[in-house]
Image (cartoon, rainbow, N blue to C red; front, top):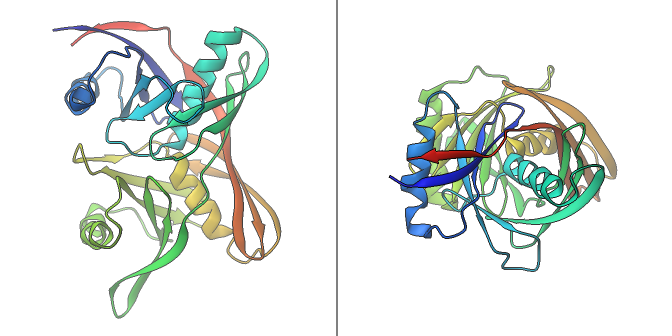
Length: 265
């Protein structure tokens, strides 16, 4: 067993463990993540590992499967700001796996608010399961989300959609986002390829952005804002569009950070 310094973040229920030790080999990420996710009392849904920056940002967070995660980005940004500044409102630039550039996180340390810029989608696509069933796909750099409109979440549909998505896009991670458009509510199921994990997440930042992009489909120019309800809480979303294309995207909301835990696993 070895001791790890771990921060537990709660961004709208999407419990994220951030491992602060920088001397961990990437080949050990999956094993360590699995052990942390098996500690039932924390309810961890995903794990990230802190590393030195690679592309000119502040510290870097590598997710367990190399995927992108918006909730982890804003949680990490709040931690970096609190560690550096202790109090106040600050903008920090952090790196995250699945994004080719550093992202800015706006933080309020006292209130625990964190708002991050998000990668804009590479494209909005369609995937056909059969001649009568077509779904909208939001393709990001480090994760792909498929929108299922106005249906109850169900794992059987996830099993049908997953092979089609993995064959067509081969993403680091894939989310099936069940969207109740009228209620602006989502239920995310997220699969990470390297770990093989499938999680009914309490919230999903990039999935929330994907839903907001879908809801803004009729907006050609301007800004679309909405508060999207996830099973674990509300995530604020903001989509900027020009000539029908997404030019900027943001998510924000409260994040709870634990004291650093020294865990033997």
